Amino acid sequence: MFRLDDTVSVVIGGNGVLGGAMSEALAEAGSKVAIVGRNMDKANQVVATIEAAGGVAKAFQADAANKEQLQQMMEEVLAWGGRVDTLINASGVNSSTPFFELEMDEWDHIMDTNLKSVVLACQLFAKQMIKQGAGGSIINISSVSSDPPLSRVFTYSASKAGVNNITQFLAREFAQDGVRVNAIIPGFFPAEQNKKILSPDRVKAIMRHTPMNRFGEPSELKGATVFLASQQASSFVTGSFIRVDGGYGAMTI
Image (cartoon, rainbow, N blue to C red; front, side, top):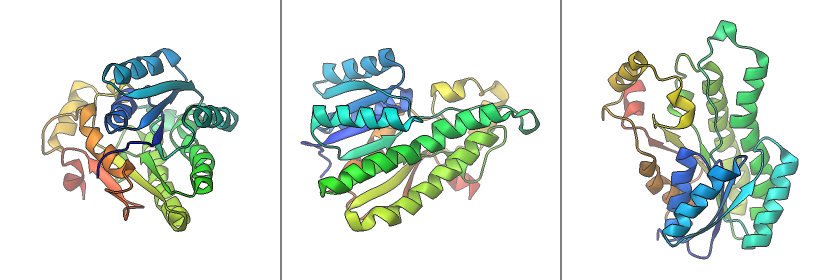
């Protein structure tokens, strides 16, 4: 039920810490995985890790917020794998700039990376999945800061709230074509984008709201990833959010 043999997965942002772990999970379950990012050195490192474990992967370069580059990348993936069964939108960037100091170039950069990229990728890859006629799975990466929004990460929170809305809207839009759209809501993980903003006082505050009293490990996203990617395991699951947050959500309801 949780095997992904004979499938092709695309992980945009697969060269990052969390995206890399999710890419490894897909490969471990038998999927061929396209690792997409701007930094090809990091993408190739993920490919090497997957291949060392016996999986199949290839690195592809694209700016997640550039439709032309995404289109070109999709064509390259199709030439390599022949189809696309799973898309993960894992690109992300964060900032702790106070609201009154926020400049619109920073707002645009975060919104482009976290939100616009999801819209563009879904436009392209959902159309391809529908054309294939065998359904598919789109997995967006949201955040615990999307509901309710956390202090100090205003633009990031707004972008991830948008991801939630897009996820539910497109789940309804694509349901009749068998393309499922869901999201994973990670709690606090040691990813590059949040290391810069986690002062000791901030860490203490986060732990006070995390019942498991620790950060997540990237590998702890693997189960949710494979579940949502598997047509057998999650065939009737769409428009849903899986929280992988150590209980953070239970403390903020």
